[in-house]
Amino acid sequence: PVVLSFDVILNGCIPVVLSFDTPRLPGGKSWFLPENQPGDHASVWETYPFAKGQYGGNQDFEVDYESFVVQIPLKDETINMSSMMQTMEAILSNKEELRRRQRNMMDCALSFTYGMGPDAHRYNDAFSHILAALYHYQHEILPTYDPPKARRQKLGQVVAA
Figure 1 (cartoon, rainbow, N blue to C red):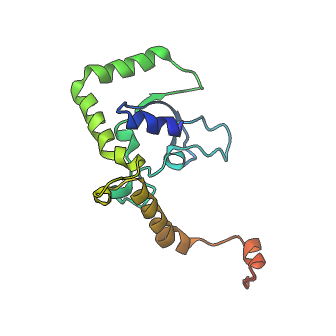
Figure 2: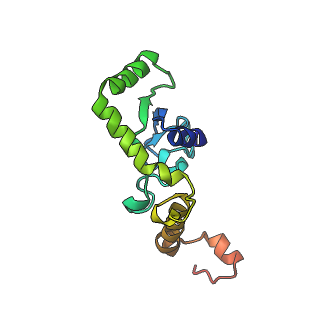
Figure 3: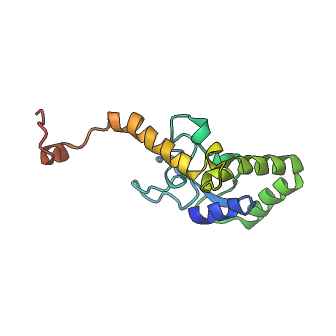
């Protein structure tokens, strides 16, 4: 579903997704599948790259998918077609809302391409986002990471009892 979303965005179409509440997962929402049991990992935050909130609030390198994606809420894994049609018709009939979503989508579309040409460095493309993710990982995640005790022992580190 994620790759299809990128194709949709790069072709100028607004993605429409089925939305499941996943309160135990980061972001509290999944556009992939419902959370059937603890340990299911399919939240928007975990499955869509550069999602808002992944990089500690650095808005230059985050994509606010919710600002343009049309979400059809699902309860009990049942698709309510009339609700889906009403949601889509409401957006299509509100030209201002439709334009807002299109602008927001255009603002982040470069995040899914690799720049080419002499001015490629002027825009934050997919490569820039990957570098930002690595920087965030190295400076924010890695310093606070504490490998499990068994792994520290395997690595030959002294483990305090």
